[in-house]
Length: 264
Length: 246
Image (cartoon, rainbow over all chains, first blue to last red; front, side):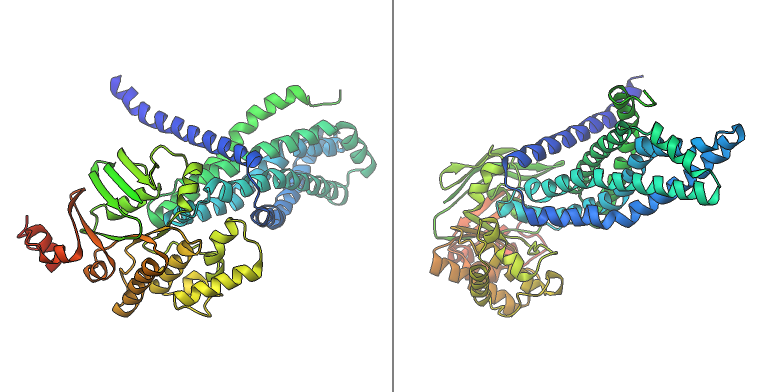
């Protein structure tokens, strides 16, 4: 029994230490955002890197998810004569769940990996020590521009994903599955409320924060050369993706109280 | 300028520093010599607050830097430049951007003034016309010289050098040594040079400290070191590996 708790203790302690480091990094970053001058050039670079260069990935993800979801929903609903409800189901699902979650997973893979690899390489090649030695605080220089860019870009990317997903679902439903366009649109507009969109964008903001801090923390704690950077990058993507999926459940339960689903 | 008292540091299970005591007077050049892996670079990083000791004190201009947070250390770091072993250049920036970085961070925005200062310092490090190159296309010696230019462009009162001549050919190594001497003579810069290159140590230093088993084993002038009969120092100076001094 003692051996069991000993075996459990070390990983548990390191998990709590990791959570502590994440919270401290987040607190340090928010303090810095409000108390120190923003480096606009770095911030705009990150906006391009996170927001602009993620467009293609997000459009493809949203488009094909909306298309396939519309098709699957129609195949099931059509059996009970509810084919025209497809639009409502697709729209609400993409707004509340699929849009934010899939965009976050894609951004974690594309942007989170790049962040941790770049910062990790700077760490193991003493570039972060050089920053510190030149009296530049790494959080101000590396984390703040990324965090701000992510907080702004993620809701915009999710909005784009939702729009493309709904549009793709519409085209598949109307032109491939021969659903009546008027009923499709009427049901979709009737059942999709602004709170569904707000919920999706709120989730996007939270997921952006998770991804940026997990990825930056992994980069900043990278060790042992190329192997360490590789490990940090992998862990950043895996941990960000898991955090997004786990937090999504709790956010859904919480936000459903504030923005309840359905036609009310 | 720099005073180190009873500095101790353990990394993992290994005791790297076991009570280092050291003083560097304003305007002097101290060479810290010792065997590879003996803790010289660790000691140097402590001097600018890049590592935190387990015990001891480090005073820069009378201010104890132990216990200061990163932002408080910023003021100290503006006075102390450091040249890293590999140069530690920012690999996404050109030579010019690397050198101008400390000035930009200090608020200098005028491109002409920045360019003039960069050109002036490129002349000092004998790298005129190389400002548009990326670090990856520079040789080891060039990287060190650019790193040095970056660390001195803000005119710090003290510069720390981590193995400034390691891995360089004798001619480039000599040019770095000349540069260190020139900084001391012209600008009165206090310097701490960590090296195991004895020629470099004798060339640039007013005093030499030998770090052995985590402590300062010898402190004296280069002439006193050359005249010593201590077997451990003799082994190091003559490059003997049969351990007659042990």
